[in-house]
Amino acid sequence: MEPRHRDERADLLSLHKAGKESGRAIVIEPYVKHAATRGGARSAADTRSPEARLEEATGLARAIDLNVVESGLVMLNTVRPATYIGKGKVDEIAGLVTGHSASVVIMDCPVTPVQQRNLEKAWNAKVIDRTGLILEIFGRRARTKEGALQVKLAHLNYQKTRLVRAWTHLERQRGGFGFLGGPGETQLETDRRVIEDRIFRIEEELEKVKRTRKLHRDSRKRVPYPIVALVGYTNAGKSTLFNRMTAASVMAADMLFATLDPTLRAIDLPLGNRIILSDTVGFISDLPTGLVAAFRATLEEVIEADVILHVRDMSHEDSGAQSRDVEQVLGELGIEATDPRLIEVWNKIDRLDAEGRDRLANLAERQPAGRRPLTVSALSGEGIETLVSAIESRLGERRETIALSLDPSDGAGLSWLYRNAEVLARDMADDGRLAVTVRADPDKAAQVKARFGVA
Image 1: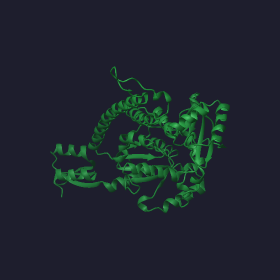
Image 2 (image 1 turned 30 degrees about the vertical axis):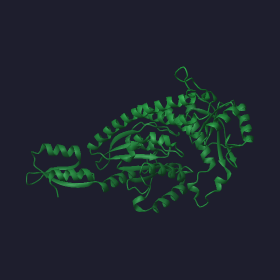
Image 3 (image 1 turned 60 degrees about the horizontal axis):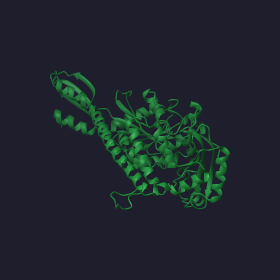
Image 4 (image 1 turned 180 degrees about the vertical axis):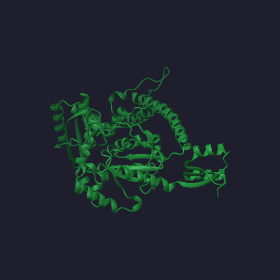
């Protein structure tokens, strides 16, 4: 197995902080030899190297306090149906497991139930594939009831697929009803039915949560504050940027999936606009489809946003591939890369040298004016003022300014304006009427015009 030395700045090891570890782990990155050279027309920035994938998998393992004692690449000519990797590598890793007293082996790839069972027998250790690892992280990081339910649902759907011939005791049959009952149902069928019942109950609870979240969203719509959502690959610096812009104390660490549950804060921009900034869960490559579906209620904050900030870690060697993964998830939510609400934020420029900054600035300048990325450092605050100005400008493009003349005694009308639009100015005119200037989104602007008879 080819060794791989980890970049120490890639992840903050929580086990070093807490002095605890949840197990000794070996991380394996299998890759098919011909897959690495396939599709030569694609650019290097869009192709994630096996080394980078291994580093990310190691970071994921450390994110749940696993002590990674060994990690490495395993090159394959073909995927073996029984064990995924060849017999020689299985024996070699078995020696590493024994030598390091490892209790967990992480395979950064999709592993079938049969492959998992065979590898666990060969290594006498727990085997976790990429999907199981991400589910484990999400299960530990979920803090709200909604987050816990969403993770539990995704985990049960994953567990249901693991029942297929995963354990031989599931093949035993139980007796049927009646004296001359038939063969009855197998333990596998019983366990699957129990899981499906739990899935049904959780889905019912999630529907209640979704309705509650919709009520909250509807109440925010009644308040004329636009929503700006932060999206991006995990560890791109979204929470640090959120803290910088809101002066909040949301957990921000150099760790994959440091935050999971969404956070919203109201902030006032320099020109007097008030917005609601939303920090969402980070994306990752090969995110389990069950998790995307389970977290759809949370991600609806992004769908409903007036401005979407796509935060990218430009110091990362695979920034281009990470961006493509984020765009894929956004596409599943119906948000295309050409959506006018999107603003690309190129973060962590403080990690680049002078030459790297110049190259990044030139690359940004070559982009079309309407889609030109903004370079910032959420850690140092560099470029934040330009980002805030861009948000105000983007919001101004969608909002309409309306001048109104009200009777001073129309208190109900003035109160309605404060509830449904952004009041920019309010003065007494020479004719004794109240001159009010408001700004509102297109749908609210139509309501303002209809109520006050503006052509």
